[in-house]
Image (cartoon, rainbow, N blue to C red; front, side):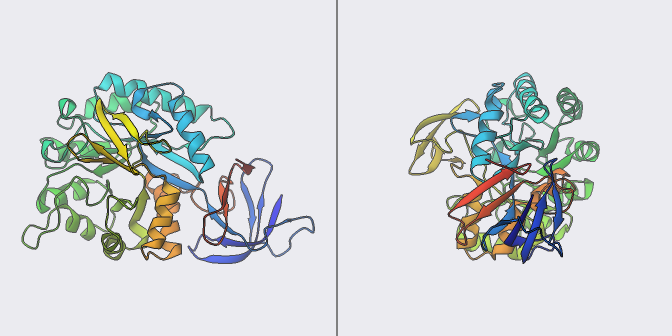
Amino acid sequence: MFYKNARIYGTDFQFHTGAFEVTEDGRFGQVLPQDVPADAIDLEGATVIPGLIDVHIHGNSGVDFSDGDPKGPETMARYLAKNGITGFAPASMTLPYEVLEKAFGSARELADNRPADCARLLGIHMEGPYFSEAKKGAQNGLYLKNPDFEGFRKLFESCGGLVGIVDVAPELPGAEEFIQKAKNLCTVSVAHTDADYDHAKMGFAAGATHLTHLYNAMPGIHHRKPGVIPAAVEADHVRAELICDGQHIHPATVRLAFTMFGSERMILVSDALRCCGMPDGEYELGGQPVFLAGGVAKLADGTLAGSATNLFDCMCFAMSFGIPECDAIRAATYNPACSLGVQEKTGSIATGNYADFVICSADYKDRKAYVAGKAI
């Protein structure tokens, strides 16, 4: 099947007017072909972008990945697909290993048996328990522990190697050795850390290539105590996540992040909780109550707990904050695919990739998602 007269986001991260093909096996065939069949579907100038990929999302629709509910990831994936997010890595919380193992098993089930109307589960983001008490944020302090590679390895193997990102605070005892070993299994991210510049630099030199929710749960930039953020900027192999929900980060600081890291190193994430897509009220996160009011989710003490916004809306917020359209799309599609190591399969409209894409109106308010070439 061919689609023509489309404004297509290309592999050069720019838009091109043309056509593309979806093959019978649900992949992209020809992109911007010279000849287009007469019966090609005319998109009448609509914008076509790759399906978005959220590498940091806890839940939505009343469910949380860490619940370990066998159907939880499927519920999440169905909501995501409807909203133009065609791939995701559910994020766990700081919890006991036995609880995490159960949740990771539910992810494996969806990855192996995806219903046609669901987003693809591309990996797991293991957020915790190797965090600093001082910067635990909304993580449950009862279950924090120092980096433990053997414990992590057992969890990694229990889900068939599905963990794509594991988080660690580099100042903790054993962190350097943990990073050096874990980097051979998945992406290692610096997160929930009180590290100074030297500890952060050590973590990136040891093999960490990711920074979880930039600005949040880490020291701010100080001219005499530069801390984690400048260390990450200087390590040009490091990509940085950004929660662009209109609550966690001021628009000026969003623009600053893209200026510091460049469009090739920014990753937009939702960090969405089970209250995403739900009405105001009381919810739960890692054994702690969360209160959603006016689109803002907080713990009882007022700590921001995560977001109630999906990634597509976060991408649109980024554009409204002044991030160029092409840069915002890259940060929500190709860059997150790279962080999970799946960029040869998804994240761009390229021949041979999964035909996961979104047809959008010019203002992105109207959108229709396709997974494996099938409309959701």
